[in-house]
Image 1 (cartoon, rainbow, N blue to C red):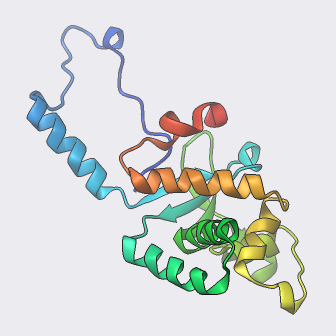
Image 2 (cartoon, rainbow, N blue to C red):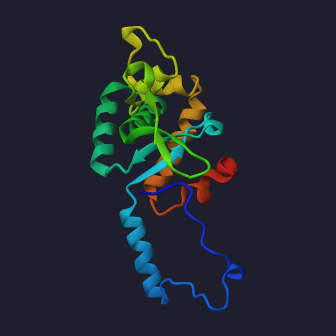
Image 3 (cartoon, one colour):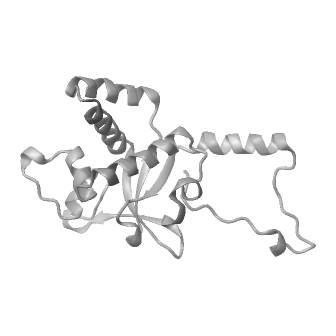
Length: 188
């Protein structure tokens, strides 16, 4: 599993003369190690846009091409509008890749499941559950995952879109260190 913040390696000036930095020596060894890291990266934690100061993260899993194609085929039948199709595909990718919501402990760097104390302390694992945890009380007609995602992001389509783009970029290259490559100062 990829953690957004990886442990820092010691700096050269922090290594004493009698210590040696252990690691792959040749370029081939380094490339093999990097390939293994990429292949083993199937999940990542993303800070939830708008809730960063509270340490709220969503865990996302890598989806395969066939899952995305299935979503695309279903949505093509739902709407003819190109922009709406793209947004729905992005929403469904966010929804289907989510495997839980967590609070990150700044001191330890550990992730703790968010548990809904109003629902028997069950873990909050879906967008609907997260929206309900935050106070969403829809009528039955509006109780669906897409609307829940919008509700969590305060109805801001741009926030939803930006969050989806971050996940999409990670899925395109799971070797990226999410914080360093495209979250920038959000985590600093």
